[in-house]
Length: 448
Image 1 (cartoon, rainbow, N blue to C red):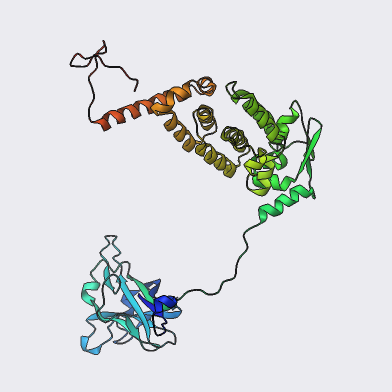
Image 2 (cartoon, rainbow, N blue to C red):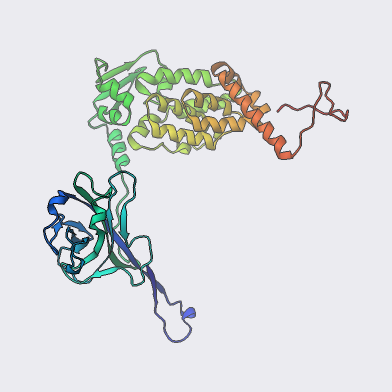
């Protein structure tokens, strides 16, 4: 493979004139193909005469037809039928076709001791072989002594198996592309979002606390296997055109009006359990108001993206509020098997990890099988500079009650981190029960 650089210059200082440099690349490579040729009834083919052959079917490689020729009595009269001959031939019209070849006589005993003649994998002094015209051949007149062949493992059940590899050499030159036809980005989400906003074709309505929300069954079923089962499955609701959600607070439904259906009560449980008094009341009001302004889940199902979080929160730049939204959306995404939304929420929670919210996020990660997010949270909490502050949050109290098994895992993380710190420092002080080291000096004990 070679590279050619072409540049144009005018007399004088080309640098000062800023003459352009153009670049092109010559690419030379092989187009490879394979063919397997089984020669059955070998003993019957013997005696056909010197120069007579049996041939494979033609096969295509690199735009040319090829065929394998096997000479049971050899190709040359001077060998007196002492050898079998094997060749690969160009079977289509062509001139100066350059190619690499490989002929393999397969060891049929299973020992893998094949007889191979190959151009591949080695340097060729004169380059690839050139076939000048149709019928041009490459191969061996004395491919195998016939007496040895007939007593070898290459002959099995009176048959031989030949594998052929052909690599046709092709060259092309690539230069800068001064032309292109732009392809517009997909606007499927835009089109579905517009469909939702227009209300056209809606065939299912959800009623919550006197308010209604319209949607399209097929869109919901396509995006969520949970919706698909509820709307079209054998256990679907009897009335799939109008579904009434009872015992639900309207503000909660408006928050994620498309938590809709079966999962709204789940959202309310998460909301009431995960909110802790340590958060500012203003944050609760902010969350309640922002949730009444956008149908977040329904928006994602149709648009395949979340609405702008700044716009969603009325321009308030609050990492805590953003984290709270992501936590609730994570629960909803898992409930309705929206894997992409779930991954987005995990990513946002990972980016916004903080001492005030990490315990709640860790509990969510455990409950909804978010293993990567769980690992990030455990690692964050186990850091000495974070552990004490996290343990003082109400979220940690919730974590202890809802996921007690996580405490064991957390202790293991803390222990491993402590061991790593000791090893990294290169020494460990031997501690006694009275708080002294081996030299009798008082040592402040630390929790590892």
